[in-house]
Image (cartoon, rainbow, N blue to C red):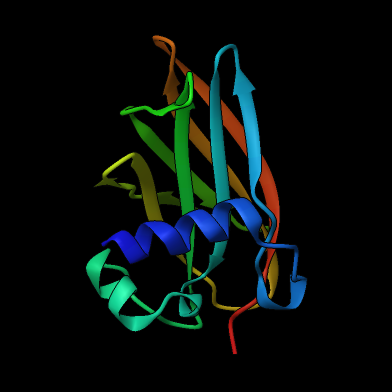
Length: 144
């Protein structure tokens, strides 16, 4: 599971934008003294053993969103939920699962990527006793 953390942190913190492969550089939002980091990528970028350990499906038609919340330099246990909406306004709920590792807590959800298109993500995160909403658009490409 430590390899999973290493991969996801690398994907979240140091990946450069490669639009053709549907990877975007890590994004973040700051709410007072709390920072929410988030990134998306196609699940085939995960090694098979890492995907299995996180109970994720590896497929060129499955994306992953990774969310982590940090307060005062320490990972924060919180509530994370969200939806992904296509251009026809069809919305699919994101079912996040919490992953705990020494020194890290992050939340993962998978979503379908049937074709190249832009989707809108709406993520709700419990921060400092209230719910904060992060919305962003992401152009998605099925993997190779």
